[in-house]
Length: 410
Image (cartoon, rainbow, N blue to C red; front, side, top):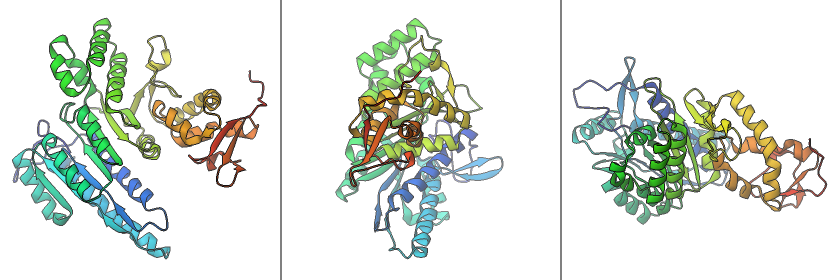
């Protein structure tokens, strides 16, 4: 899960101690894999679940936390797959449905030979020997070979867990390459944004260029830092916008993970090509609301950063009160968005807006509740050509229309 710069493992040596915010990352990985597997097998006629997991910076696989052994990402991934496969199989047996054939190869990449040896031992001792391919090498020089191997075997789904220690081992071109290599690729990436911001200077343009930022992004970042080096929010927004532009992912979640041990912020970024994948990840941010933070607005267009907009300096903590605030804010904005997307699908509205809000799809559905009740909008199921009355039943392929007769709004 982590690089040897921060943690070290050696056979016969003491286990490294894991910090609480890193435990949250492990929980997110586990919960997301569980949701992913169950979602892809929810259809009663599903017969095969075929996708790959690549843990790019595996580490030794075991940590110490308050005197207890805690599994790192490689063992947590393997354990989760085994558990969820059993749960899905039992549920299908109880429902008298056909069983699912699971085809889920796991690749664990670790560059340090001593840590690699420790990981091999940890995997073998816990009876996962036949469930993982452990690779001793740099992620940057091995991932393309793994991609080729998977594509040759007709895999079109893959999840890359890239918990790098800093910000440069998995650069923007690598992320973009992964996302275009599979029809349904996803990436969970740790990015030490404050470390990079500290590093920003005219002397480090080559390093920034190697990261994958173009000169327009770099010059804008340097200008922003020169104008006000203390304004972290402005610098983070500029950096994020540059990364998003260069990566080209359809959907993403750019929220900060909080750590008590340090005041330096880093992102837990999730890139995907489907709105449901993005939505499931955001749900987990609300589930672990004590551990995530967004420095920005609660409604739509949250990346429209402006130094004049006080709202962008607020902190959004993913607690229940933040969720309610987000709903109220979106309720005041959604009418304009529906007008813009009238006669298009709800999915098109979501695709246009979902990246720019800390809200889930369910919150956006709820924001339409009153508009449906009073007839300001219509939702049409194209398969039946019937009106959808309940906001909870709105699907991505449903047509959303703004009616001609609108209430007078104060």
